[in-house]
Each structure stands twice: as C-alpha cells, then as structure tokens.
Image (cartoon, rainbow, N blue to C red; front, top):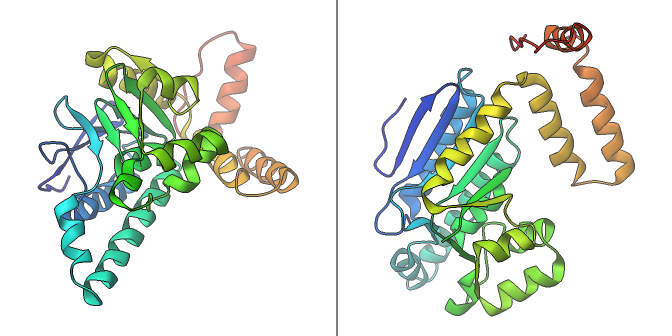
Length: 266
C-alpha cells in the first residue's frame, strides 16, 4: 500500500479501513481529497479487498467539512482562484461519485462531527454506522455557500425533499438519533463501538460471494437513477449475469444439502 500524509489504509480479513487523519477535525483540503482519491483507486483495484470502511482519525470528528482558510484563499483570487475553486469542487464530486458507484461495499464509520463535505462523503458511502455522540449537518449556508459535493442531491434521496431543504437552508446540526429517525444513517451505536460495528457489518458482507455483492450494488445504484421499468431490466441483467459463476452453484447446492456455503469468489 502507498503511504500518504493525511490518509491511512489497513487491510485485514479482506476489509480495508481507510482513515482520514487531518487534525484537528479531519477537514478536507486539496491534498486530503487527492489522497482520498488515490487511496480509493488503490483499494478498488486490490482483489484482496472486498469491503471498505471509511472513518476519521481521533475521536472528535469523522470529517468536519472543508478547510475554510484554503477556500477563502481561492475566493480572494478572482479569475485563477475561481477556476481552481471549481476544479476543487469537481474533483470532490468525482471522488464521491466513484465511491457511490463502487462495486465493493463502502461503509462510513461516523465517529464524531460529520459536517459539510464530511456528510457528503458519508452519504456517498453505501451504509453509515454512527456514534451516538456524533452531530451531522450541511452548514454551508452559514458561510454564504451551498453544499457542492452532492449534498443537495443525496440528502433528499436518503431522507426526503422537505427535510433536506430544512437542513440545507438552516444549516442546523442534528443528533445521531435524529439522523437515524430520518433514515440518514443505518445504525447508531455507543461512541467507542463505531469502528467495530462497521467492521462487523463488513465482515458479514464479505462472507458472501463477491459477484452478487457487485451485482446488487450495480442494480440498486443504477436503478435509482432511472425509471422502475429500466431498473427492473438492470436487475434482470445483473441476475442473469450471475448464472455462469461457480458460487451460484455452490450456494444452491449448500442450501439443498442444508449446510453453509463455501464461496470462492469464482
């Protein structure tokens, strides 16, 4: 694995833990986004990795937004700075879209403040495990901005239009419990148990064959971007595509023989 300044990766039992470690609150700057992009590419290309858990270094924050001084520097430089700001915006969007469309499950382990770009990263992940002490929000409007890395799109899809508008227009933070109530996170656990819970979820998933995992992720992600009719076609295509795998035969045989399947990712 490559080494970066602000991103660490560790692989164990086919589960990669990617930690964003940019003290004090793991904020995003250009370097962090670049390193995250490179690390995600490396993990997605690694055949030994079947699931990815993303978390923040320390106990204070998952990611508490963008590096505001860096943003100000870009905005204070009309022309060239504005172009750089747009590139930074589009780079983040591309990275998060790559995570959302990954065919390996990506789980956010939200261990603290999850704000702005941090919440946008968490929403790009396929699942979210949240500390009971976490606070989540899109506070960009308090700076005269709006979310720019998918917040205006994914928040409404994961919760509902009215709630997304409320959170984005007020900039309010919500508790982990409220985030669970509105469907923004999958589960809330005690603060010290977040990473373990995320790894346990990943471990359950990686015990399955990699082929239906990827097929299900494609069908769900692609299907949400189209009509129900086209989504059903995508689902059928993915289903039929599994017929040639050895694992489907192992799964069916194991069921008939009343034993646990031994998938080989073949």
